Length: 443
Image (tube, rainbow, N blue to C red):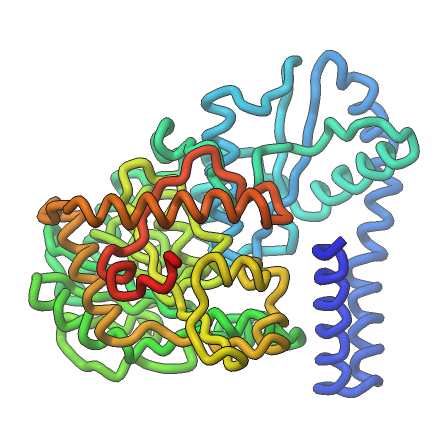
């Protein structure tokens, strides 16, 4: 029920935002355009494909044909869901007993990344948006009328989350071919990089992309995830001292990184930015540093080491990596009421762990404090040493990790309203430097 209420509140807020920005007349004109351009053609296709959809249902006991939309406007969903589907298919998880063919279609006309769409088309069947959506909604209608189980949608486990740690068992299914990789390294020469040069992708979230991509919508409820990239300056200097180039990632950003250096490449604001390079850089980087947004999911499916900083909400952390090449540090949850930072238990108790309750931060007077320059530096040093196999773990490291994850597992199973966060194994790590200097979290 909470998720349903949250969904409709977002929809109402989005409509109010459009009316306030453009006025009621332009709002009505836009709705008429959507009706004429989108809904009426879709209705015609529903009528045309009605008998074909009935035939598909008739032959389903012998040969099943399934349809599934891809969330094509957001690269995070566009990357992770097909990769998890292919991993499950490889291991014969959630596969039909009878012979079958699966068809996918972009949920919207076009996609957020044309190059990645080509990568997808080599591995899965993608049909035109209008054709796919017609069959998809006809099957939903038939299932609603007959009240039978819907076997015509592609069901794979828990959307974007690798709850069964499949990425440890199956190699990447959506990897780039060697010719595209060669082309990518040729393009890196424009930035002064050689073939064997180490580089790191850094992505700090702001609302620049959503404002440009969806100008008629208000995504203010995501703003609590934003972070100031200038706090990364000390960590950037450390990486440069270790021989890493740094690519500042992002499709559209509101703020440029204030630190200037020949080894720092402001790719997000460069003329070299392309769909291909977005994917190539995520595929070939030594590791990825992110606040947890969109493009890091591409690095995620490529099994790249990822350091998540300023991460909120705590519930949605990715935990697939048995090799422990994922590390996290969180924003501090400071209560203005009791004038202190909240522990992990207190965060869950106040229901601040869940993205569905974003408004609680304001209502409960919670200030989200970004990670300091020192925290980002210490965590980056630790992570770089870890993936370079230079970090020797001490006993206290294991004790802190065990205490955190034991507590987290109990809390998530007790408090999560969504089964997609119920992981079979709790891998990944919280930065030891962060835990050791913020022991209030473990109280």
